[in-house]
Length: 80
Image 1: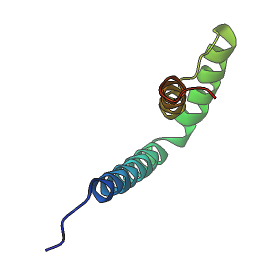
Image 2: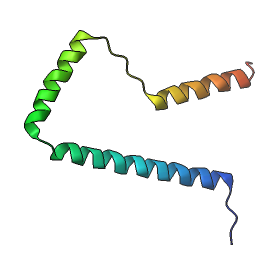
Image 3: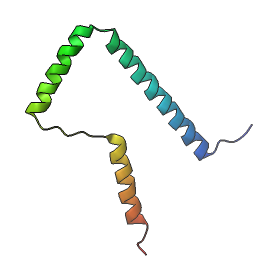
């Protein structure tokens, strides 16, 4: 039997997480699409009114993670 390396295990975990995310998002969109279409229009109008009234700040966890990795890499790798 072949011994699994760390890289193979991490790659499998990444693929599983990606597949799980895709399935969850697809399932959530199907559920939302099955709801009443007329209520969706009212929700869009309500959402637009909320956006106009308040300042929004979008948080993207994957971008924050990449920024943190780059900052850590800059600290660990000496400048030449």
